[in-house]
Image (cartoon, rainbow, N blue to C red):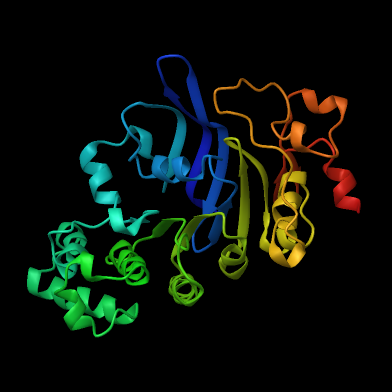
Length: 316
């Protein structure tokens, strides 16, 4: 199967006055049409940077090397006009903070309708009708009244649903959502989960950037685990939640309430540290002498893990 997005040897660094911060290092990942991929990891692992890199919306201070292909087109080499036609049209974006994602002085319907005006032949009147229909579909009710309201009038849950409506307004090929359940109460989280399940059922490719493992369990087909800017495991949802091969993946699952709320000891190393071996070795109870050496990606069928000791966990 041909990937819809293919990332090869991606490295992203930010240069400061005193040192260089490497947020993503030599990352390779394929995302296939129609699948839902959850990218999980602790805060600071590089998840959001990866999502922004796909959309080419990183700040100018970012130094990017590698390839990000969307339908065999390298987005890192695309012109501004090509990126404008892709962003918000072919690739939708749901940013992490919906309160910061809207223009406070513009009515909600117009903000949702803008992508339709840019990427389709819709008139403003038709785009408004479609915007109201989207708000209705995503349970912002009564939709015709809330369409004429300003973002300040919306609750946090309503803003999140409106953000999803805006990100999917032109039926994108791919939707990238950055922490869509962050700061959302259980009732609104259930509604947001339903929104993404609906998009999944419509065949939209989804990249879900999240630290919410229950959300990933509900939606993902595959899981990519990111730690200190490196992918340490790529596997199916079923294997990740029942038999993870990387000790960091295992630690994330043990930190869930239903598994005893056992935190991973220690902290992730700072991004400016130059690593030579396994980045998780100082927090790992299974660390061995060989973990000081560079760790390759070991392949098992369609799964990958970056750990010398994966076979011990695979057989347990």
